[in-house]
Image (tube, rainbow, N blue to C red; front, side, top):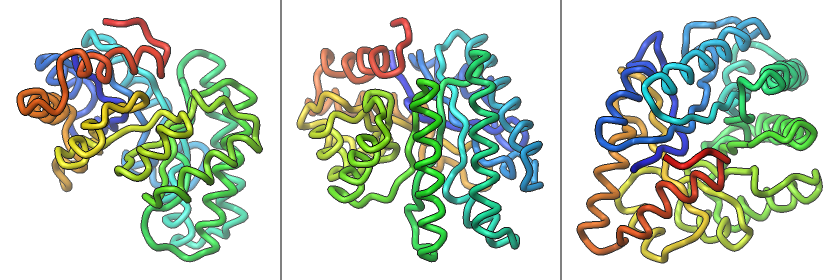
Length: 282
């Protein structure tokens, strides 16, 4: 049984959740952590709360299709740091962007209270170079998101730079400052250094399905690891960052090469998902 801890779907321009789920299940998939894309990826181009309402409604519908295909799912919606740069480029002030993000989190809470959204994601900091004020704006938005996640007992998927110690140390300090349950925080798309510190500080973290990265991290048999495709379902960028079924292929390769054994494969693909996301095992 195989799981994808962080995946996107786009029924407007890409495969959509129904096709993704059916294909993933056909190769042994049982769980998908489904994360909303920014609204403009779906064609909702206005920088407005209405665009986010449409995007969240869409991803909730996509989650239903995953369940109909026989897989379990957790659903996330958020305010990606790339949205800060996009809306700033369009002429919005950083204050207006932060205000919009706060409105989006309030909307997410409404859906969470109805049992339709499980957490906030993605939210965090840019992993690419950007102007310092936009980085600070993204961090202020992250801190707002932490308040909502704490007050409403929601999961968080954090999009962060790959800065090793400083990346994870900052999130440890922020989570302590905000009084967050660290078990509800996921460090998304980590490298070896972030995995090391995530393990040390007891954060869940998701490893992209790249064989070199997986081998480097999983050869040490860490206990808090999850594996993700981070599939963005964009036909203009096929396979970015990978496909959910690539997880199956990569993990089977590591198994065949003796990097992991069947017991540990089950631990990563099933036991950790059950514990981290609070879902029933397959």
